[in-house]
Image (cartoon, rainbow, N blue to C red; front, side, top):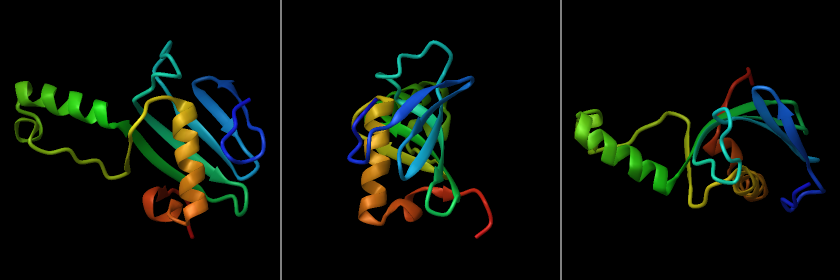
Length: 124
């Protein structure tokens, strides 16, 4: 159980997904096999809101992961030699880990920014 500011959450593996349920949403993360969940720094997530059942997505990166990718690209000439970073559904967070990412999602809901930051997957 983790405290996200919501009621207590339920979390666990539903291979290949790592799912976290709160009273307001269910987040399904797709980490790499064997990845330390406290150190996740680049992961796809699908979020289903409890209020209306709508589905949303994001690729969550830490600042450090963006820096690591851009440095690598500077050696491979990808993305103009690492001169830019772009991702259509990207969400950049400061700290790694699934628990931190859940807290960010909860705050985005609280602040009313959730639907501007994540991409909707289903019809409106």
